[in-house]
Image (cartoon, rainbow, N blue to C red):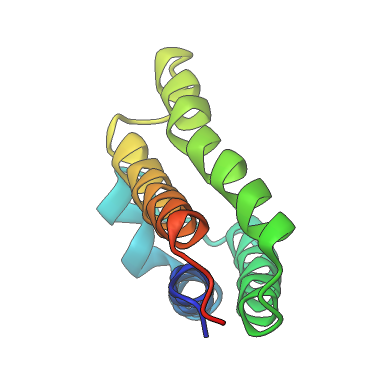
Amino acid sequence: MSRTAFTIQAFGAYLIFLSLGLMAAPNVLLPLFGMPQTSEVWIRVAGLVVFNEGICYWFASKSDAVPFFRASICVRSLAPIVFGGFVLAGLARPALVAFGLVDLAAGMWTLLALRAETRAPVAA
């Protein structure tokens, strides 16, 4: 497995574990991000979406899907920007931006690994 694929697999595992928390015990996680507890189903639905995304990351890592890796860098870089917009609009508390910074940091990890592998000489 390439170093870049490993970064994708690690992020996929993070998403899977996060999703299990969102589905099974959302009211433990929500206050960590300054969000009110809820008894509504929406957070569990979001948890399933995050689970599905995590599975996609996991399998993309196994197939060394470089175009997916590149796209994921862009997508993950948007999270803190969009979350920051939610905060500025008064829809969320600033702690949500920290959550998006995890996505950004993981995306930058993937970017650095991809660049390092692109520059590395190919073994004959």
